[in-house]
Length: 488
Ligand SMILES: [Zn+2]
Ligand SMILES: [Zn+2]
Image 1 (cartoon, rainbow, N blue to C red):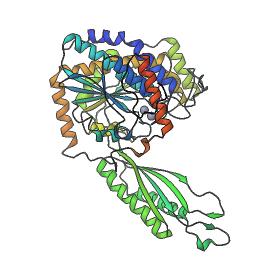
Image 2 (image 1 turned 90 degrees about the vertical axis):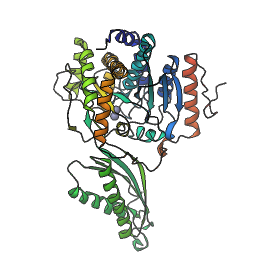
Image 3 (image 1 turned 30 degrees about the vertical axis):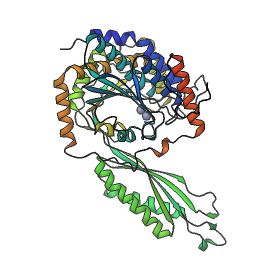
């Protein structure tokens, strides 16, 4: 039985480092693909604590990076996320109030705690392994654009997950539980139709309506629902339906997301949707372009790892919240018309065989390597993520305490994988059996995320952020990645 006391001490000593990252990233609150300051800061902290930054800008995602320490097997991965959401900026008060710094983006999904907990755990584990002479490699992977659901699924193509033995991740939530769920696979298709514009009153016969094509497509897609398995999900957004009522629109644009229980199922319905887009063009004498923005795999559960992580969670959670913190949480619940029972004070039993309708870009990672996550309560019960109340909690003592305990769990699970070959064997065997001889073939059309491409101004901005962060810690990694930075 591994003694975790010394490791716990390492994590506790890092509590200020962990909160410094979390609170700064909370303040920055940067959107997907543009997490310049957050990505720069968190990679610089790892470099400062002896990790080598082995990659930056993987798979067309500029703000991604890989930091590594150690040698040989096992290789344990820690996932980092850092993007915020638009419109969720909030002060650290239990009412919907703009953030003091005026930033309207906010960490309503708590990704400010994800990076700090993973990085805190990785640094603590490194220190412990150094002192105790434990062999193994720790790889921390900075993953942008989780909220755009298109980060890790592209990064998988770079091969950085291929030689991992286990990959660990964490996510703030309203409950404490192992993330042992089977989520849906999904694909995002952007469909554009080109027609002919014309005056809708004087010469409609000369026009060909792209909007009609979009309407026929959506009608067909909605009819397809009858033939979908109960686990399928279909959502769409009309992004462009014409500019004026008296003009036959020559352009229309629809974003459609299909989710299904497996990548194979998604591939099947993706083809059907593509056929419908073509059919809509034929009926309206327009032409269509279908762009695959990216697809993600279903998340594979791993009971062996979930059992391990739940055991560790029970040692560090639930948190002994103060009365003020519970009051803060109850006020948010009151504001949102939810039961006023405050923050969770339990750890859930291991969830077995649970299917969820949502999707996560961790899915692709879970098809490459046995993967498990910690979900930890950092906002009130009954409040799903992506709300102002979550932003408020993630920037104050509730988030600070929750993130620290998550770091303890992540570090402990990492050490167990480094030192307990039986657990590794069990987790690997389960991973192989869950994959059931199915080969992983990305649902993306390319290895580089087309939406990750940044313009010159953005690249300059990121270079400057990297420069400042590295300089702050007295480091001199070659930050002139694009020779854009105007610093000397
Ligand atoms: Zn999230
Ligand atoms: Zn989210």
